[in-house]
Image 1 (cartoon, one colour):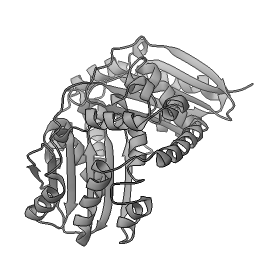
Image 2 (cartoon, rainbow, N blue to C red):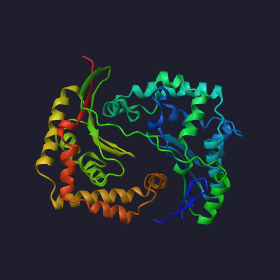
Image 3 (tube, rainbow, N blue to C red):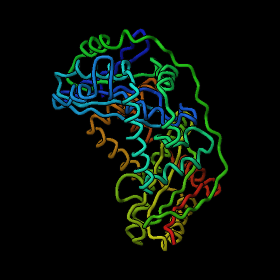
Image 4 (cartoon, rainbow, N blue to C red):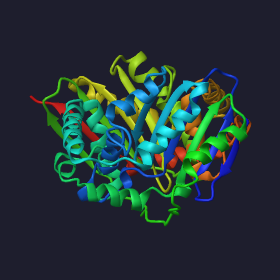
Length: 409
């Protein structure tokens, strides 16, 4: 896909992706997330993401929310371990309005005390609601085991205690320490010329004071594996298995993405779904996941089932792991897996807001964006030997941490 990048003097980059559609999509990605918080300030990055919609130097909450919604546009945001993202979809005439609003809420929010108090209550409710969903809560508890003692293991939402103690001073210091201008990308996908995107982007972002990146992240150490079980007031058992995995820059990243998709990724034809759900009818949901990060990654397996079926499910899962280790993929099997993965990636390009966000992240992570042809070549280059090495390392039973929630009684 065609794209252009323009860097402002303060380091902020403007990403332009031309499109003939009448609908445009834009985002601002900041390379800062929950891993950049201290333990005492857990939840701070997510709290800031909420508060920027509350009041700026020239707008109140209603004016912020109506600025785009009044013209039928969609505005939203999210926080991850390593990113904060604000994004919008809108009709083409409203590019200037959108980028101006991004600037206003990100760089000119005032964080009034009354709004902070209200939003703390909202987030505490969100934390309580999240904990009431074991299929969600187990992911956070599992990450805390895999990344024990590191900020990557902590819940993005924070805790009741940490969120309650956040101050305006904490917010301003976090922004100063982590909103680095050379780690910010404003991306636009729409029917505009590069000159127009640069002109509007420079209008709203060229005067942002330079704040260049200073490396301050510590990579997590590899923790000893653990096996934990807990009884909870739930109806169904929930279980997870996994390990630290390859980073965004590891040569085996593409191979593990392929293995993840083959084992329990998107679609109903994954190995584990066919074996555990379709053949044995044990679990409604069984899935694997792989999240590569800047200096590490995590591979996970999750399933939910009746407590009487947990041991049978584990037995079948380990049987499949053993099978793929003892009988490595043939060239034909690997090519089928590649064809499926390539097709899914190609179809994913239809999600235009997801596409522009992905491209902006790639620019931050790699200082470049691979086109589909390059991505497909990387997938096709994965060899059976490489897959064998990945399988033996990632699915090594001695390296896998296990966590299970059982119903009481």
